[in-house]
Length: 363
Ligand code: SAH
Image (cartoon, rainbow, N blue to C red):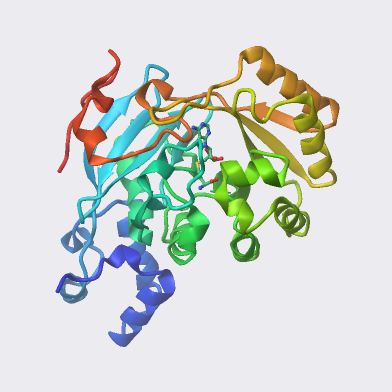
């Protein structure tokens, strides 16, 4: 039988294990600092622990590491990692450098089961939920490849999968991610969870964490939203918006509404007006995401002028509206382009483009 991975233990679970061995509680953060802050890959590295405890841990647990199957770099500096999980499935993470930020976009599921019509990951279907350790290891592994003078400042759960459909593991990962004493220590203000709109889990997330919420809205009528996002049949717009209205959003924070712009489909003047109406009174900002094309979809990105028109109309209604730049779209790393079928790994997808780099494999 394989040993459980120690990175899958919450602080509390690790404390319980240590207590049974008559160790003091503070050992838990000591061990977690080795795992999550110093990136230890073996128990023997943990030199401030007794030899006896180290061998007991060695006997009881394993320490995971993701395999970097491929790493490609966009001409805009964005880096896409293809990580291999222990069971041969692959997932992707995207590191996005900006002037003052270094944002890592991570996955919470291998594939996705929500079937949004415009998303590349949807075409894979759901393979499985990621474990907390697999969510966290994406940060640890990306961190290893970052230059010493840079730190990952922001994490967004916007990669493959639906974080809130994998709620327990996502929550556990968020706890360790935000724990400054023994975990990775990223402030919850710098973490954003993006969801397709699972109402009960949104409520739980906002009660149980202090992270930022982004809701994928994408349409202003149930008819269109259900066509684009089948989840709308379960949680239609009125229910989703009502939920957002009632959330305990901390002071000086806002909910982000994401709105993918599909040419000729959801950016008419009426859409802009309805969107303004729908969100009235909610402390929010709107992120417009011009569609990122991928093979297997015939949607198109609107022209710049169409995007501007839509943005201006929302501005005029008093909203803060950002247009999300397509980062890394030349290496299929932009929103909605993540997809890791075996055929694409072995095929030409990762070798297109003159700036795509083949960087060391550590497997
Ligand atoms: N499951 C989460 C995270 C998904 S990815 C969610 O649905 O929010 C993050 C964002 O990218 C979502 O808003 C998603 O709808 C959007 N997206 C998906 N495919 C896209 C595409 N091809 N172009 C632009 N945005 C896309």
